[in-house]
Image (cartoon, rainbow, N blue to C red; front, side):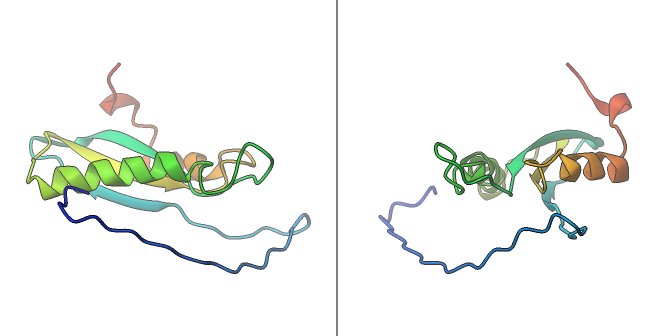
Length: 120
């Protein structure tokens, strides 16, 4: 991003999966942020989920890897350009979106509802 070089990357992954109906599996959100210069306790939250449901039309990496990649890229561009946002910008890769938004729920349980620091 923001580079004049044409770069092509290719990766191959091998994965083994197992369905866990009868047990709780621990997972974690991935969080990065740029702290606001004027209102550090007010947040702009962007992101996407990092789990996927591989069914036809929802091919894993694009559910919601594309949305999350754009969110991370936005943060990277802001940082690279040396911009100083007034409010804290937080990018979150949510876990367990496919089965009830547990990652988002846990994030807001830990960080508060944010009602006092939100705007419409």
